[in-house]
Length: 68
Image (tube, rainbow, N blue to C red; front, side, top):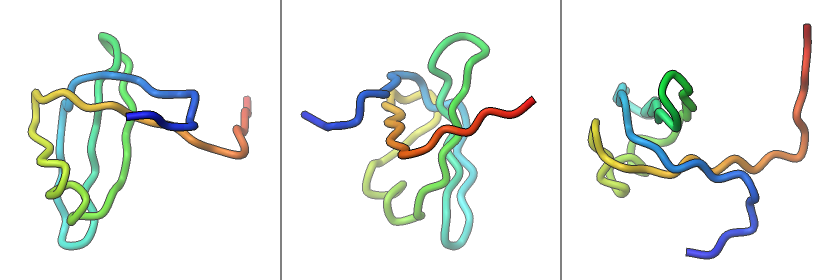
C-alpha cells in the first residue's frame, strides 16, 4: 500500500463500538496512546476489524488546531 498521508500509526485494535450506521474504533499505537476513529459500519465490516487485531491509523488533515 502506498499512500500520500505522512502520518500513519500501526497499532492494535483496542475497542470496537458498533452502531446502526457508524462504528467507533480505538487503536492503541503505543502503551497508553490511543487514536479513535469513527467510520461507517460497512467500512468496518469490509476491513474485518477485530479487537486485538492489527490496524493502521492514517491521519490526513489540512488543519491542525492547538488550544490551551
